[in-house]
Length: 170
Image (tube, rainbow, N blue to C red; front, side, top):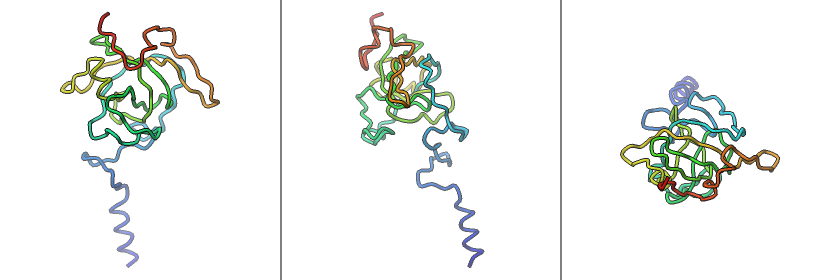
């Protein structure tokens, strides 16, 4: 009987009810794709990488900050920017920008640095059939552990004051 319990336990080790179709579970909160803890980025400096957007199935689900994901909102997910960070996200191909608030963790795909609400992705020119785009993410305000806020590289940008806006008329 003990042997059967050991075999069953070994066979199911690592299984989670939320396992993805590929057979592996998504990394836990603030874990990188390699399973290592992601280091919080409180530098306020620009980062360049790929952006994707939330699938429609996540609409209304609670994000890491406890607020339901709004597909029409200016919410975004980052593995390293602290929750509550406001940042300017610019599609490097179109030049279109939007201001987002980091409210969730993700994306869980290597090379991606931010997940955007579908509305924000559309506003900066990421088409649904395209799915991803190369972007610059430049923090405006970064909350610090002591409750203060650090000004990011985009804090001086007057356009950064317009939440979820699009800079189409450049």
